[in-house]
Image 1 (tube, rainbow, N blue to C red):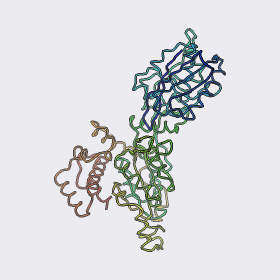
Image 2: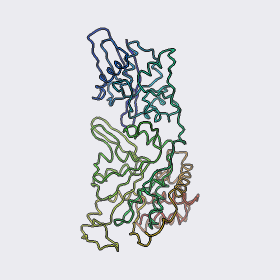
Image 3: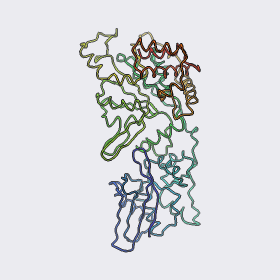
Image 4: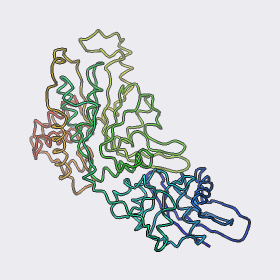
Length: 505
C-alpha cells in the first residue's frame, strides 16, 4: 500500500515542502530503501525508525519498504524525517487511518520511540502556515518555539506511541494543542555585562553609542588600551530597543536552523550580541562551508556584531563584510548552489591608534615607528571605514573620574529614550519594510528626511569643506535624523546636522 506524508526541507534559510512517499509491498524480498538525495543522517533514519516502531510494539511484518523523498533533486539533510517516515510506514501498513493532506510532520526519533529536540521547528511552522496545513506534529521540546505561529495547531509529541493513540478512534487520549503564544508577553529586559552608567567619563563616546542604538548606525571606536572601548561595546545590549515581532521571527528562524535554541524555549527575546575573535575565518564570519551555514554576521542579524581589535582581523576577512554592510544580506555561491542569508546588523568596531596603542596619548610615549603606524592603519581599508556611520576617538579616562559612585543615567532610563526614538522611526517608515533610519537608502532619505533650505546649504558647505563622499553625505543625514528623533523633533535642524558631521571628522 502507498502512503503520502508531508514534511519540509531547509535550504539556506528557505524552507520547502517535502512529500514523503512510502510504499510497503508484499512482493520482493524484505528491505528498507530511502531514495531522493538523502544525506548520511537521513539514510541512518531506517535504523532509528525500525527500532522505534519495534520498541512501541507497532510490529511491522517483513516487507519491501521504499521511501521516496520528493522532489528527488532537492538534497535532504538531518534527522527531522524520522517522524514522517515512521508515520508513513504505519499508514502504508494500515496500522493507522490518517488524513495526511492537512498535517505536517517533523522530528527526530530515539530508539525507544520518544522524540528528541530537533533544529528548525519555527521554519516548519511558517511553512505549514504558508501552505495552509492545519496541524503540525513535532517533538514536545520544540512546541513553544513553533507556537508563536498562531495560524497552525501545534501538536506536541513525547513519543510516537502518543501519536498512535491520538489517531485511534475512541481512544480518549487526544493530544492537546500547544497554546498559541502572545509575542508581547515573551519580550524580556536585555541582560548586559555592563550598565552604561558604570562607564566613567567618555560622554562623547556614550552619546555616539546611544545614537547608534537608536538608529541602527555602525560605530567605530578608536583609542588607547583601557579607555573603555570594549566595556562600552558590551554595554550596548542594555540600551538596544525591543525587537519587533517581524524582527524576532527573522532572528529566531536563523537560530532555529542552526540548532541554537534550547529545548523548551520559544523565540529569541532580545537582540543578539556576537563578538567573534579576530582569528575567525572568512567562512566563520560571513557563512558558507561544505554544508553552508549562516556566519557570525547573520547570527548578529537585527543585533550587534562587535569586532574588537578591528585591524587584527585578516584584511580579506574584513573586506568580505563590505557588501553586507551596504545591502543587509550576504549571498554565498558554491558549485552546488547559492544561498542568501540576512545580515542587517549594527557593527561596533574597536581599534587602537597604533600597534602599541599609545600614539597621540599622554599616558605613555608611543614606541612605534611611523612606518609601523601607517601599515597598521592600512589594515582597515578606506571603503570599510566609509561604510561606518559614527567615528569616535575615545580618550584615556582621567583617574579622578574613577573614584566614587557611578554617575549619569542608568541603561534602563537611556533605553526608554532609545525606544521612543525607534518608535518614531517605525511610525515614519510604516509604509515600507524598513525599521530604523540606518535601513534607509538614498530614495528613502529624500522622502522621509527632507532638509530645509538652510540645513541643506549647511550640509553642502560641510561636504565640500571636509571632502565627504556621496555615501557619507547621506549617512550624515540619517545620523542627523536619529539625533532629531532622540530629541523628539520633527525636522532636522542645523545643530542636529553639525552634531552628525562631527562624528565623521
